[in-house]
Image (cartoon, rainbow over all chains, first blue to last red; front, side, top):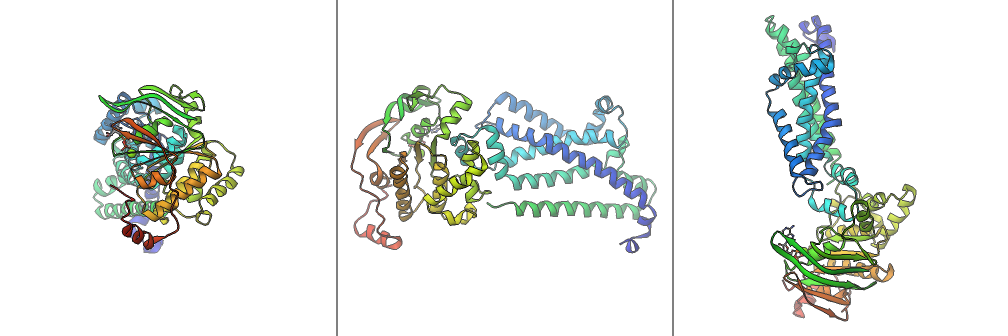
Length: 224
Length: 249
Ligand SMILES: Nc1ncnc2c1ncn2[C@@H]1O[C@H](COP(=O)(O)OP(=O)(O)O)[C@@H](O)[C@H]1O
Ligand SMILES: [Mg+2]
């Protein structure tokens, strides 16, 4: 591998590795937040919709509005807007760990919306059959909704992860580092266009791998 | 058994069911027939509280259930099986896993589930299909799986909402035969909704005829029995030659 790499990548390899690790931390925690918080929120959002099991107009519209606001916030502004909050929670607003917090917030909003949409594809009749069997809401979520929409949930996570990578590239503004920030600092600010191009290629390869894995997995688990 | 007393159901200002009283006898096959929109499904769905009556009572085994909440309603529903026109199987679960779901919901220990699922599948003749997915099955086979799923928890009553309305005549007769066996061999009370006269006439001992959200009449009949002596093309030919009216709509 190494000998065929362009010299400039070899020259900067320790910095590149470091920034890949930083990106992985930011994206990794975002994925985790999306799964642990975004999935339940998206499910709850779905269940509160009109005609669904926990139908509740007030709860639905409030939560829906909140998700929409976060998602329509220009991300850079969200990061800056959140600085006081980030400082309060993390003790500092600077660095990779601090940058991860706004990433997690956007990740939760992003994925919860996609989860809600994915669950809409579960046939109403299946939910109805579940209710007729005496299933509880918990049963319905885990034995019906997630089972039937699992491919869509995987594809949504794939799409989300790719967005998170894109979001992570601007985290340099709060000292978050990462591969995008590296490309900007060296490739743009120090006129190393070749380096920037190589970094972009690396990012594209990562995105392709994620996209391919996501689609393959989604296809494999879809038995409908 | 199952009894409705002066039940009324409104959708906004529209009365879908207007003060209906109906007693289902233990062990009978009770047909409910009527034109589309007559309120058959709504009436059936009130029996397991998929629809809550706005007025009147739903009584199961001498117990008013319409004011029950949460877990108590779920427990009642676990003792009433239900099948639908659209089967509503979980596409990502195998036949076996689909049938096992009601047992999981009823918190039956895993080691006791397998035998009961297989017994249920044997009853509908689909043992060999246990590892297939619903998309690999025909409509009739899917409905059999849905039936196996509905009876796996030993319900006392089976509610059937247009169970054969998306099936061809031959498959319809096969499904009706399965329902008859469930009634006779497992002693399950069956309430079957259909807009098809042939279906109702072949199984039911009593028939509720509905019109505009009301009972027009309850008729006692001698069921004609399920015709399964002919199969496939022969059935079509026979019905054509006899001026058959298996599907008046
Ligand atoms: N959820 C609903 N909201 C509004 N109207 C409904 C709803 N469900 C049924 N209806 C109306 O109630 C009437 C009876 O419906 P249904 O019981 O499904 O009739 P059937 O099963 O006899 O065809 C119909 O006019 C139908 O449009
Ligand atoms: Mg109907």
